[in-house]
Image (cartoon, rainbow, N blue to C red; front, side, top):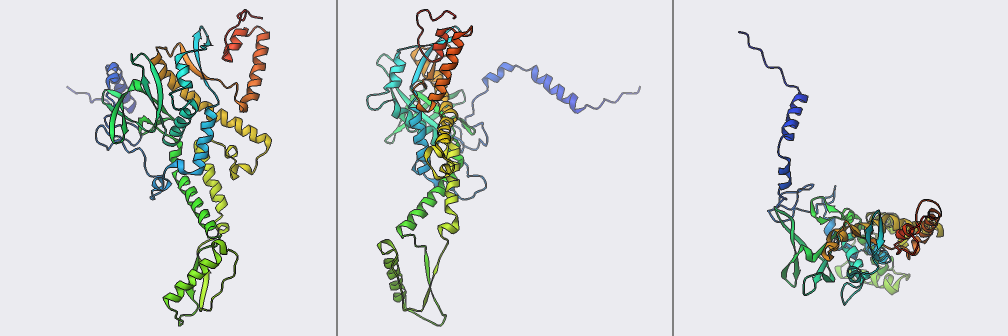
Amino acid sequence: MHQAHPQPVTLWQATKAVVKQLLNTDVHALKSVPFSAYGGAGWGSGGDAPGRFSTLYAAQPGAAYDYRTAAGNPLDNGVVAACVDAIAQAVADAPPVLQQRDGDAWQPVPTHPLLDLLRLPNGFYGSSHLWAATVAGECVTGNGFWRLVWDDTHSQPVEIWWEPSLTPRFDAGNFITDYLLRVDGKAYSLQRGEVVHFRHALHPRNPRLGWTPLDTAMRQIAGDNSAATYHGALLRNSAVASLMVSLKEANTSITPDQISQLMQNLERKVTGEGAGRIAGSNLPVEISKLGYSPEELALDKLVNYYEARICAALRVPPMVLGLVGGNEHRTYSNYGEAIRDFWQRTIKPIQNRHAAELGAQLLPLFQLDPAEYRIVWDYSQVAALQEDEQELYTRLENACSGPFLTPDEARARLHLAPVSGGNVMR
């Protein structure tokens, strides 16, 4: 009897079979997939021992030189420090507002222990310093940490302290088990309810930690530091470029002492307070310039490039900082636009992220359901946004004049409490 040969399986048929098999598996098993014990499961993760973080900071693309080490602490760079300070000062201008859901609207909660704690986090510094330190950590390392101190009955937090660095710990069953705090060489364990962890963004190599775009600008930071050092050295030497002393003729000889004396005389006469003096020598030598001048290096363009890239990483317009690169096209009109752009594209997204983390991590510690309560920010006193606020007032006033909003609904959008008769449509 003739036996039929099996028909060849097409790629599409094979794919359908695999998909069908996957759909028939227990999808609930996916919920029990363990977290990586290597700290990664992100881009480029793996290679570390269990319980230790993967290498978070790789070399800069296309460079064998260690620019990260050369850059040092980013906050020691003048441009980074100016950007971080501008963000920190702006963030403090908009205070937090606690709101409670009221149907489809949100109503402000005038007083609450949470607001009191955010206003005065501890007895040694206020909210502006707390937020400034938090923002600095997010900008430079991608992480901002708060340590919470609870009352004696452990009913709610009563103090907030900024911590420069905490180490999240984890195992296969928990994304984060606790945080490790090191003080004077001693390690302390902080439970998750004792920490609020802000991240600029989830780190692609380890989402337990934060990531900052500034990490990509280490070459620019190192270059800007080198340019500042070069400028400083030139000014210290009264802008006299490096010189080389050599014999004019090969058959001429002078002693090492004569060369040393000549170099000392030149340095004394034409650098420092001797700048502008005339120096001469009766020795048969030739003095030539060694290296390039700032003009030949186009150092101003290099510095502007470094500044622009650093500002771009932190999303701060150079014009806001008064940097040369931003002042070329600065007018009163576009300076105001730059300030508003800074608020809209930088400060508000940062504060939206902060509000989300406070809702997820801090509100539940005060027995506040994040589905019923939220933190927003009051921009009514921010000078840079007053024009936008005035436009908002005008739009809400017009909406109240027609069948669109009640006065209370309009007031709620301005974080204001209801008024008598305010729930009646005009």
